[in-house]
Length: 142
Image (cartoon, rainbow, N blue to C red; front, side):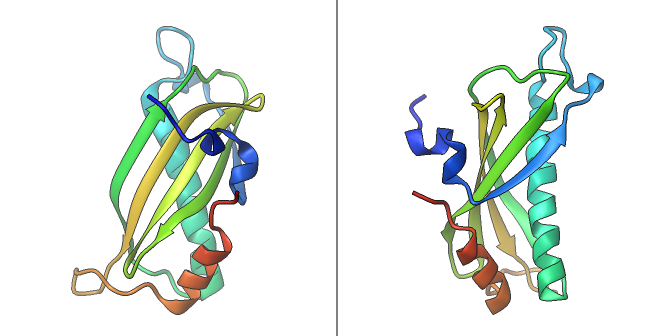
């Protein structure tokens, strides 16, 4: 699978979360299993969205509509995973978050997530202006 070379560079992403791997994240081949990698991306996404909620003073109802992960190489235990993230697209009621997982400056997985702001009634709602500003400030670089 061919990827944009920029996506494989940590400098492309304006934000970073570092998380430790756990013994239970390994599979029978002694590398990080795909579910553990998905959980690392999930944690980075949640931490970014929690930071948005703190800045806004209210937590907008943001729902995950799509997640796609490309596994490029093996991740290892023990060690830290640097999860780099940025915003690839901003729509009216949704945004696309692009993430990359690195160990030893080597990208081993990419993740794209589409998130939608939901109204209390359950339909899509426009992005709140302060959330839009935060997303704009975290657009992918380069």
